Image (tube, rainbow, N blue to C red):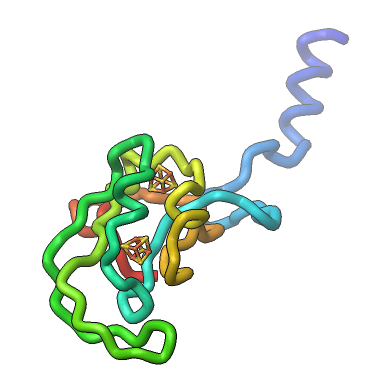
Length: 122
Ligand code: SF4
Ligand code: SF4
């Protein structure tokens, strides 16, 4: 193929890239994306923090009342997750006894402030 015909073909063909984030490709089921924790379910047991191989979870102060297995518990801590440090292994989700922490299908952890990449709330 000559250079000229290659140029003409590319000139009239659609771009192969997507205009992310305006256009997003469908995310498959089971995609391990952004990690989030539901404050109202978390019992502050620290298991997620202990199993995290990337040391991405730090337990921080968060006094609150939580319903767990029919009882109301006074809890003092919740996990804070450094999303830029997380390797999306899913161990925190697997070991959480309260079904409080999950990997969601959010693709991006872009952010310009620390609060945008360190999270707890789902
Ligand atoms: S998915 Fe893995 S690396 Fe990420 S916070 Fe959970 S345990 Fe840590
Ligand atoms: S998210 Fe789950 S494992 Fe982590 S502190 Fe809360 S209850 Fe425990």
